[in-house]
Length: 342
Image 1 (cartoon, one colour):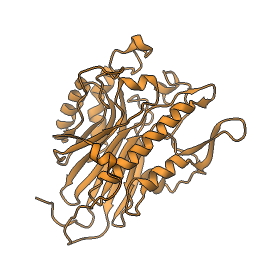
Image 2 (cartoon, rainbow, N blue to C red; image 1 turned 90 degrees about the vertical axis):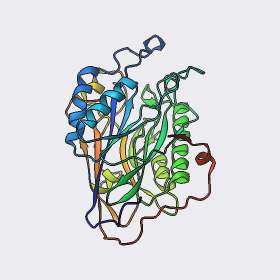
Image 3 (cartoon, helix red, strand yellow; image 1 turned 180 degrees about the horizontal axis):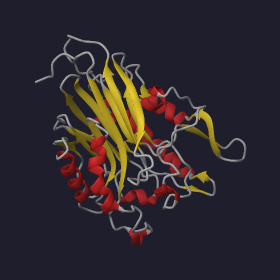
Image 4 (tube, rainbow, N blue to C red; image 1 turned 60 degrees about the horizontal axis):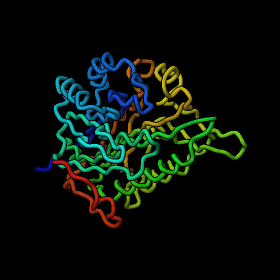
């Protein structure tokens, strides 16, 4: 049964957070055993801190093992989040693919449709990424007032930074993943309210080589702009809730989510990487759904090597019309290949 008419003032709060829970013993292949520090202590604190954000829906990345998923699902269920969705890892090795899955986990106060679809990106950005399956996952959230919401969760591949520059071949693979993400969203979107919560492993600013000293400059990258304009379809575009609500442009100083001031970054495995905004909550533009706020959370805490982003949305017009689905059209290549979990 569909929810009733949308109510004026109905709200939704969404959190995205890279939990940094890598507890798979792949150290013989070059990955340090202690890459995710203080895991046992952090995973005990995480459910309470996540719940304290008062988010209705929480999208997590890098929850790699089943034990970590089970611990967080149990802890969140005890705190009022009875619904969860994730894709199961395979139990076999093929071409160095390891049974780690994609690390994505969604927990929610509201029901999640049984129909979960996902798409594994065709190309890994680097050799270590082949031990996982970076992907995009779509679920439908049944909000009591807003109706069905298309929620996309994703985590894109990392790109190495050496000798003051990003690896060019890995950047090309990352760009291919962005194209697949956009196409998957565009061809599977089915409801007007559509959100993307993701660790894109990509800063929104342009990386410029023009002056002989590679650096970020005060322009939006073409990759970021292309993702925004090509993911929703129907003439709609993604809105970056943080930049929108803080009225920031590419000329303003960023509020980093992957920050060299974070102790886990500064003294850890990724100490050579520049600070970046990597974590985002996007919404397909919708005249009746307004992003009221979008803020960083967990900054200054030893909870992860990333900060979280929590966005609050509010429905601005009462509607007595039925809550309808969108008709997707064109470009069905990825939609037809999408995998279904029931």
